[in-house]
Amino acid sequence: MPLPILALAIASFCIGTTEFVIMGLLPEVAADLGVSIPSAGLLVTGYALGVVFGAPIVAMATARLPRKPVLVGLATLFVIGNLFCAFAPNYWLLMAARVFTAFGHGAFFGIGSVVAASLVPRNKRASAIALMFAGLTLSNILGVPAGTALGEAFGWRATFLAVVGIGLISVAAIAWLVPSDVAEPSGGGLLGELRVLGKLQVWLAMLIASLASASLFAVFTYIKPYLTDVSGLSTATVNWVLLLFGAGMTIGNIIGGRLADWKLMPTVIGTLLAMALLFVVFAKLGPVATIAVAVVFLWGMLIFIVVPPLQIRVVEAASEGPNLAATLNQGAFNVGNAGGAWIGGLAISWGVSYANLPLVGASLALMAVAVAVISQALDRRAVLQPQPAE
Image 1 (tube, rainbow, N blue to C red):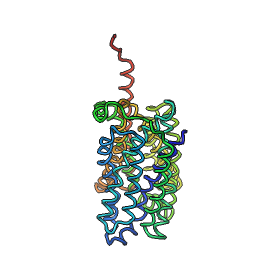
Image 2: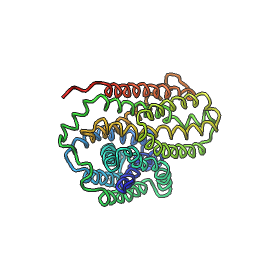
Image 3: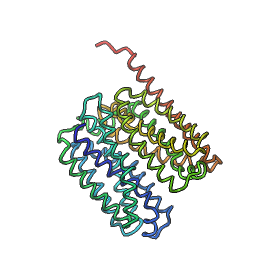
């Protein structure tokens, strides 16, 4: 893979660490700023909302600009945002800094995936996107645990300063390695980008992304009480299991890129069916600790097998103006994150036990399968439809 994609991967590592490390530092942040842990937890929600609402704004504002300066600017935004986080004197300024930082998240992954795909032959585009996203998955294995340990030892602000350092490296790498003429914006500008949103296949791909993500977070949000109450694991063991989940994500991301370059929609449909089956196994055999641990690893692998295919699906469906659509797809994943957590919480409040919560995830995964099957059927119909004579 070309070195410019490695530069994008470094930036995605920085972004992933920024997004997730706060969850391991909630007690330290709450104690330092004089707020409750649930209030500190809203910093996660604020970031997610910043991704959802900021992504289309940034994508539309930069629709006519060259891609390389936009990527450098978005990486710089993360550096500045994390610097503000490190020195925020109170809770509300920290919240504002988190939301400001998140504004570049969706746009970076959206535009970055278009750039990555443009740097390789067509039969390697999904693998190129997977390599860029590898930084995000590795942040869960390396960045988040290291950032949490650093924050516990030297204070949570030290973690954000460390992310600033990584961010500066990513800015330099993009400025040095990414070609100046890469993936130039289409001549249609913003109108061209908006026009492709009229394509049904673009929206179906984003709906699949939301449902797949929701199936994960309906259960993963409550994975700690599930593993302790249902599987009987200790809290310390759960932390290692979550690290195993991150390893599964990294492996799945690599596999997903290769499979998508081979057979894109069959990869999506087959993986989502496997996820639904795995959820059923989790519900039935979750009390067996060894099986529960194995399921969590496979679960992490399967959810990230579908990420590169769904991203390249949107890029290809919106080929005339892919930047806005690819950016919105990142928002779709985050909508699924928030929606899945809400659905899981609603199910628990209605009396669904932790042991049966994976069945909720299975239902959402099967809904994603149904949408993917419809999308593939429309593809086949378009191929078989006779072309008008010239």
